Length: 317
Image (cartoon, rainbow, N blue to C red):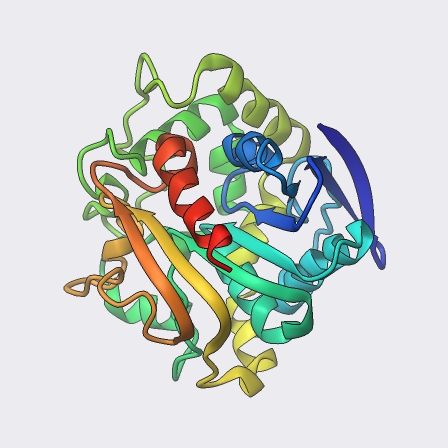
């Protein structure tokens, strides 16, 4: 595997690249790295694909601008296109997980000539609603804690997470995993609570992430902090204003959805199963795979099942 630096204006993106053949670009979420796709990079590079996995801006060895406006969906989608153009193997298949899923969905909408097909993991595509999601969350979680609301005030979550980065990552990764008590991430807490209050620090950590894996993430966040990653949550109202032209737009490219059965994202809207109709706004939807017993970190918790679903999708294009 090689690492290349891709430039998008003033932004430099660290990108892991392996294999040769049709291009797949992998986009991670919060709080992760290109390394979150290690199992997919190895799998698809060995099967005739060229795989590129970037550190999203704000993460790892990519640029980390400080301003919230640098983390809009339009900017992040343009980073994906910069990677595609730098590698130069034609239109790409995109894999995106967590925030990476909305990034790849929007890249497909904003740059359709660059995107051949899209796989969203954990977060299904939903067209622009009547209000930004963060405003909907303030209503849905009125009088109780919701992590995205907590993230809005600059500096608060940064201070909590950066006080003990190793413990913070262990607690977050475990709370969202299939091994944790179901929906521990969404447990009822007062609005004055902090993110990590009540979250378990597992010892030992579940086998899907060993000490060496965890150290990769800990080292990266110790070096780069959390401001950039958290700014993505703060840019949601900017996105709502900037992307009005996408209102009601479906994903036109072939698409697929993959997630863990026990992913808390599924229950973000109380009383609604967000995984019930993941293809409702996708014009060429090729199906969904919900992996039993697995939580949010689907491509790391269940690499074999995730890779099988992704391979069936790309082989059918």
